Image (tube, rainbow, N blue to C red):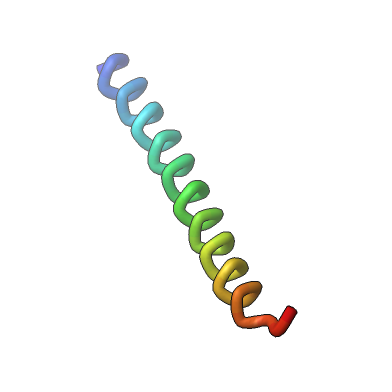
Length: 40
């Protein structure tokens, strides 16, 4: 049971990291799209 709990904790942390990376990637993608549209 202990190993199961530690496994679940690790997967939850990994999922959180993946969500943060995905969110950052979305923000960077949106920012670059807006940056490309600016008439510089």
